[in-house]
Image (cartoon, rainbow, N blue to C red; front, top):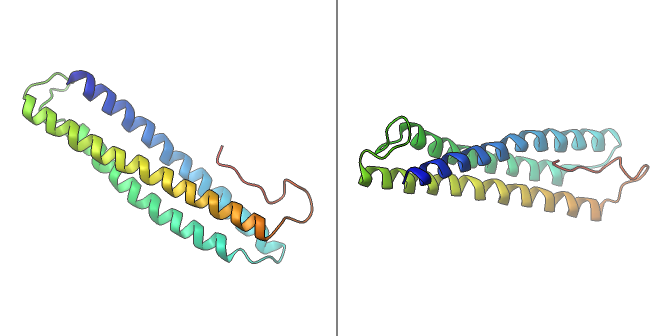
Length: 139
């Protein structure tokens, strides 16, 4: 179970990094919306998609926080990650994994839906001007 605790802790860090990328993606989509407005285009579908994304990310962040809190509390483990109470340690790992899995899925589903909305918008509203002007990525 000590190994499981280390794996769960690393997974929590991975999920946290996903959500850090969400902030950058939100910022870039908002910049795109602003550029479209400046060009006199209607970015309403992207605004709706961004609001939906933000709501989904908030829900995922809540799950991430729950998972992190469970690992911080580390019931059944000592401060070094060694098992003190196998039953409590097992419950800690199960609960943390579930919350982190939910957070991870929420992030990726939200990102996928936002990227789909961007692609749909682009197909129905081809950019005018430079080919890079209305592009966005989350990298």
